[in-house]
Image (tube, rainbow, N blue to C red; front, top):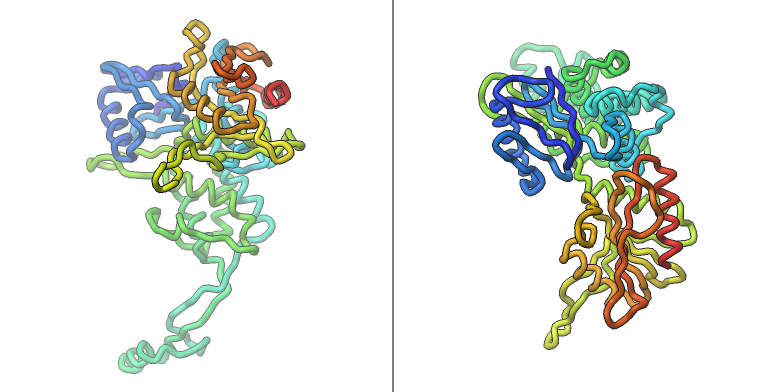
Length: 420
């Protein structure tokens, strides 16, 4: 199977008549489009032309029947570094809490040479294996079966059938402390599907070991509601990171079309969401003297004159509070900053939104539009405006570099200290 790697927002995926290591065919483009339609992906972020397709905001991978497409975020405009982009993306996903793993558990310097599908499979296998070393999860399950000896209670209706068939078995109902429970069935189903699609020998070796542990564990329907609704308890909560990855892998499998064995699946992340959560968590972890609020929804913009009911809820991405006062507003924008464009490409709607925040948040002097920096690092704002009637209230544009976490932390600290 061919593999193509592109960067979100920057690289157009070419569509050609013949197969290529850098493009997809028109038949593959049709399959890709059917997958996009079936999953109801946001079409405003997938731009088609006659001979190309451009992904905006989506990162991850899409696997078609004959080609896999890996979509990475662009971290540095001066480098075409797939390994650096994978490392930055995994760091953002981990720090934002979307996936959870310990880097020390991976123990592979070359992990970022693999594509995202292989990396996620390795993280899943290592995370699960590390917990199974501590012991598999067992729980009491209800069993109904014929037995040579009496266990629990007799199921009379079924036992009468045994008598009518001249069978000596006793049909019993009992509880059994078993490894064959719902949680392990989910893991086993994920393992079965993962083994079919990966090549990394280390991952396959780990999954083979897990298969031995799960030799008495059955499988579960991928569409089973139990997968989505599974609830943890204090005895099995240590498996939660593994289940999160299993859900991603299992929910990514779906059929496209009705011909043959064509299968398409994907694991996609929306960078708007990843970027916002990443910045929020970096601030929380590194600004101990401040309170950092995500999706702050304390205020409304207007009240109805007759009913006094609030309308137009204000919900900044991040609000930083000190001594009970909301001092700084930050909205994250996963968009390309355009140095050559008027106002660095900031949209009119963003100005209106920031203006509304500043008028309602009385204690806040600044509303920040925070973009990812694709290039040089700078702690200075790119643009700054003040309100016509109040020079103390400012709307500012900053960019934060994502290629190194320490650089991002220092930039964020500088932004906060200069605007509180």
